[in-house]
Image (cartoon, rainbow, N blue to C red; front, side):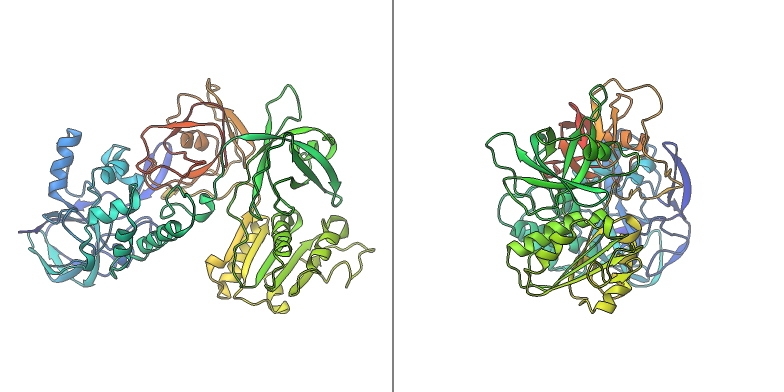
Length: 587
């Protein structure tokens, strides 16, 4: 007979971890007597990180005595207490290999429904004093699961657990967990999982992404159920020598380089909107400098065009603008990036400011090459005509599209700038311009520019009802960190790590512009990045969740521990990777 052995609750608290403060409620303590279970949690319990835990679909976490006994043997430990695995209900019975998503159980006065397996997270490793646990729980097929509360009621230790309904498809918790986190998922099993109404929306979205990936032609690697779309656009690691065939001045601050092969091999044809990484050597006796630049011309196998804005005191941009000469040879990566023009027949809005024009200009070239009849809205902001690159080029391109609209706005026009011909309005671009121009909200929106510009427009579009999956953005520089539960994290500019200089290969963070030496005191490239205050994303820290998956621009790595499911070819998991040679990462 299945029964409830212990009810465990805990409120969020701050704990010290690796020199940081983590806000978590993974510490649960058994309670005496009976407690009321509500729709979102048990009285006296709360979740610390509502992005990853809690909510109606994850109201009560369940773990089994059989797994307690299993881990005591496996880990050779005997110091476990109820709530050890962060669970609210410690139960006898209800094995992960037997309980199915959608099953319903009566416990005491409450009715519950199984919604999903545990989402693996580093905090269970903290609680268990074993950082391997997020990986071990999945690898050993003992994740535990969540209940949704169908009927509120009181429960207490000793209550019998009575199954009152079976979930459709009869997919066990362990099987569903393996579908997402382990390699070799079968299409028919994913389809079965999606037919279970009780499966939580987050897991449904992951499985839908996996099915979409399976439906795409050609060989696909990586796990679309775990990795965000912007992390899935991969490329072969390594650099290729390209020569500078032409240098064009586009505005007072922007120059374009046309790059061609030094041999007879064609270039990889990029997707409109992608970027390349350049390895530059402004000083012969200094380490190379890496910078990412969007491709601004028509995607072509014969040449690439990049456009560079000269920044005050910018080492790379100053070198490009003042020292490069026609015929010079540069190291250039393969094109990469997921900020790309999507196919379809919806209207297209290409929205940018300053040098953010470069990737959307490549999209405009692609639309002209396709002889597209889609409505196209070109919206651009600059300070004045002297800082308006590609003005004539975009004018000529837009004239070739039958359904093109253009709006150019100068924030500080020069006296020589002509309203109505050089620009259309004065002032900074705001989201209100879309309503004034009558831009259809069912469009696909492509935005590129500084972070505040992207944040304002993205928020404004969402407020106006534009679906998030139709808002595509490309930010300058590094992305935002995702460090769940960590409070008071440092926001220092990236820097070399403190302490002794590393003795290993060089590690370059391409978006950050930082190159440092690897040191054996770090357990992973993630730890090195954190020591340098490079913005990073992570959750499990053991190669399970793929939150940390990043582009491998060049170099190679090995893993400890080995990921349960390999990253996409051309990517790496920084949370458990160590370099084998000089390595460049898209961070």
